[in-house]
Image (cartoon, rainbow, N blue to C red):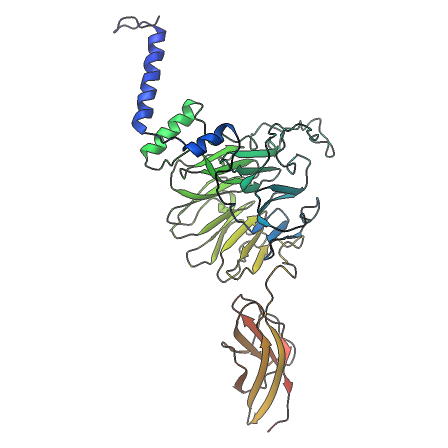
Amino acid sequence: MIKNSWAKPVSLRAVLALTAATAAAVLSMATIQTPSASAAACISAPCDLGDPVVANPLAGGTTTACAILKDTSLRCWGGNSDGQAVPPTGKDFLSVALGGYHGCAIKKDKSVVCWGDNHFLQSTVGGTTCSPDPTTSTPKAICPESATPTDPRPIAAVDVSAGKFHTCVVLVNREISCWGLNVDMNGKPAGQATPPSGWDCPGLTLCARAVKTRAAGGFGSSFGFKRVSAGGYHTCALRLDQTIECWGGNWAGQADAPFDSNFTSVSAGRTHTCGLKRGGAIACWGENGDGRATAPSGTGYKAISAGYSNTCAIKSNNAITCWGDAAKGMDKVPSGSFTRLAVAGNTGCAQRPDTTIVCWGDTSQGQTTVPEGVNPTGPTVSLALLKGLGKGKWQVQISGKAGSSAITKMQLSTSSSKPSENSSKSSAKTWATRINSSGTRPRWVRLGDSGGRWTAWAPIQPQLQI
């Protein structure tokens, strides 16, 4: 029995009944939408809701980068300490992700494959979590392989993300499955590989969140997930109601996602997280050393990617801007227009509209040197002849092949020695088979295309002077 000075005694059972009734009324007033019949069937059994795979042909890791080529095969370059730069062979890849020292990808049939470091079971697809004891584990026996994974369901996914030592996917039923390391760098429980449910409303916190979201006018048709981003020791995901849910290590506030039903994407870095909102505004939270979580103001941003201690975004004009630590050259952003962006460690890679990939930042293991065969072929100079027109006047006759993009620019140099790749003493901005020049004799020529590629400087051979 419960007593007070201003009311008659009330039984505990009556209090609980009243509380339950009030909660039910609040939920009723919130008019929370339940999953559709097809989605509800996927709550207890895996089934494919028909969502397409989130196409992501570009990925960056701590020292490695990967890309899906035009023929749908995988190609990686850079650091290969654990085999992370040697992806599986074959084709039909649609999405690729890189973690600290491992990689994962989704194929056309929605199957998932992983490669590289597996000390924490992060490359054991559909496997279990790993919580090693730092006082007893050894580097070669950190987490034993599990013959019976805790999640024995076949893995079919529509989105994949690789964290430093863990991996998460959005399954075809809009739940999230994770495997790999589940503690922080000190061996303390973190839970980055233990995702929340995509459908259930098991406790007061989640139910209250649903009520609040609906009241804000942003709650969608279900609780399911559609995107996931694995960071250093935490993970964040975007729900169908456009809210962000984070879990795992939170010592710097990196898992304290702001409550907002207006997000369109999320990117988890090592100890900070950033999200993109409708209209293109950016919100960041977590550790802010070097300003990595100090998002630029304004709207119109199109993509965002959080790295180790920096963040980059594609602006409304398709150019890239970065903020945070610039010690490894992350502030040396390439110019031009871009459609995709991947930042990890202290390296950034981005893709142009013609699928050309350029990388910048840390070059210590060759991760910024895009290998031959990854990018579309550029232009070539096949002929460069010079005619003298008298009194310091010249005519240059040039033939070139455009490669995979149209030739859009030409540069002439009057230097007696081969100029550097980024310099020219005189230039012509349009492609032509013949061009007149006056002054010092032109000696070198190079051609550029719409993808930003240039030929090597070709010598201009003199003909008989008129």
